[in-house]
Image 1 (cartoon, protein in one colour):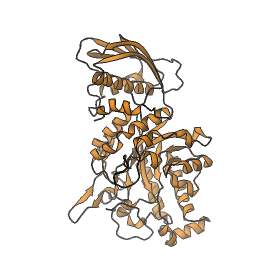
Image 2 (tube, helix red, strand yellow):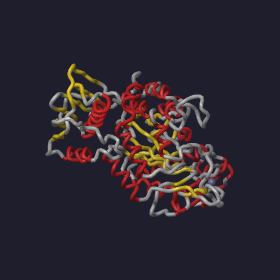
Image 3 (cartoon, helix red, strand yellow):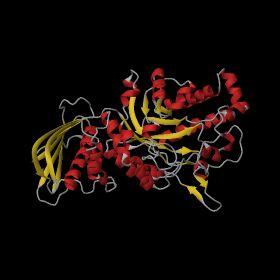
Image 4 (cartoon, protein in one colour):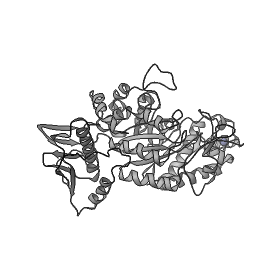
Length: 478
Ligand SMILES: [Zn+2]
């Protein structure tokens, strides 16, 4: 199983999985009703389509009961698997959700590797970290609900719970907003050649589909609008908000644009506030990622409006101006009930302790230390370990560095605590898509490394036998 359950007690008895599984639960409980809806719709992607069935006769009962069995974590669960029935105990619907994922894996393994035989056992399991995430860049190449939903169902099967969606960048804006139609009319399409445009965006229908299914998969979506850099798609729709307006187009090459949004222009700042509110309104979760990475300051250095803002506010430099802009957006989003997140560069701009930091540069240790010193909660996604657009095998030529399965397995979140384990929320693996034009490319890059990431985020470490467990399970992730 992946992630490996925290405690497994095996008994020297096996039984044949029966033909049918009957689910029993306390019908008076609304939480259970909600959960059972999920059970009846489990095969979103054919991921587990044959789980739970075998061709021999008989039926078996699975009982889900809300009961405190002394687990050390509110999202934990206990599974008692005996010859006649399976009992599952938890005190929260999330516990049942995770227990269900474990059962699906057990059934899959029994039916596909062990001739339908399942061992009698008791499992007690709970998460080590609250943040177990995957990121997906849908700007550089666009993926819609038909791809985001299977991506998320792989996450759910591995007990991951946060999907960080990178919705905007220099190369494309990917979310339809009624209030700002120009963003998708202009910002969602980039020129490939004289005759071809590339692009697309999530409309209301796509987003409803995604949010509906992900709610059942118990996955929260973190929307990211990258600001004030990585913003050429926004500037192609609203060039007046650049320091030096001209005709902009979404970039059709990879790299970072020198043109960023003007922090000295009051109208630009007011627009950004409306924009983040409009986007955050569409997502039910508590977080909003404002990006904040790789924002070159050349334009701000030359821009009279930006320089005037720095002077008027008595700011030290352009980094401090970015800090001011972040605080403006933070205030706006906090009033809307959201907690902001940002890439670790924002720690250089003088932010307060409230933003959650995505620690990404290098091995991430320096940024984690800075976050701890500043009192910020943080999520680790260091590129040397958790960038799955980096190639998995050394030797082959390609962009970026190498992040092998072994390298991912060697990640130890405890190294990042610097005396404040309470600030470390967990981890996420990032999937940037400059070089993965097809969804099959994305799948090829995240597997098998996602297994190691999921196990580390759930348990704090990857057990050495992970590769053998991957070999038994990976075929299930079609
Ligand atoms: Zn400016």
